[in-house]
Image 1 (spheres, helix red, strand yellow):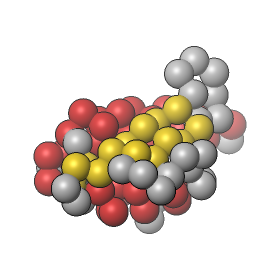
Image 2: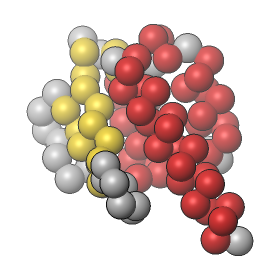
Image 3: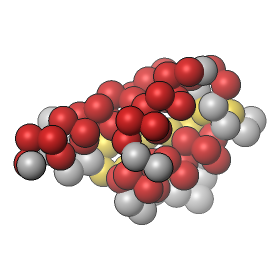
Image 4: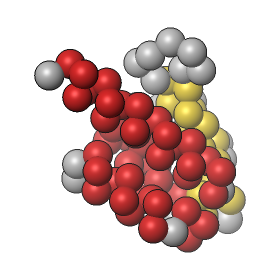
Length: 85
């Protein structure tokens, strides 16, 4: 899965994303969460500023505002990768 595909998938229905799907996308692009095992998973970002993405399991679904945070983080990662090449 490439970043554009992940962004497109998340944008298509931010309210209908399962938590496990969002967690798998975050694991793939951001690595192992620094916190897990609870209803929250916290991922550290490789850039300054707000260096984390927090996602929460809400009865099997991801919260829409957190999906939008992941989309923004993926876009930032995509831009950083494009700038590096």
